[in-house]
Image (cartoon, rainbow, N blue to C red; front, side, top):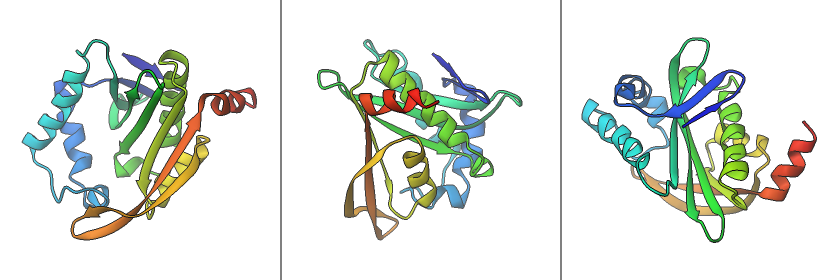
Length: 183
């Protein structure tokens, strides 16, 4: 599977992607809002294998894609959409990027592509996401793509011995379609 934006190619993972993923997942700043304290080659290979195995599911309900800079053919992160309930047409999205590429609009660009895929190809009615409330950059991405904050969950997540609040965001198909008319 491949999604393409102006600057990005989003494709299914392959085993050889482990080195690029290992490079960014080993960064302490990346690990800040994650349960992991460090990453090993084995951890990352198992992580990627999960995504490769999901590619074989029929019907496929999980699409975790490698995000590649087209110009450099460099893997800089991953983005995914997971169908939670086909009958209710609900899915959630999640993402991570190499910290060297934060603040350059790549997360928003990839998020817009994954929403388009979710609404147009998967025919979802509602797509949601969550993030640690203190992760202001992630909050900005979700708001830039038109998601509305639906909740603030107090001390929802325990990460490295500290409780963090989470924010819950969502966008509905008719809201997304209306936003596309303005482009």
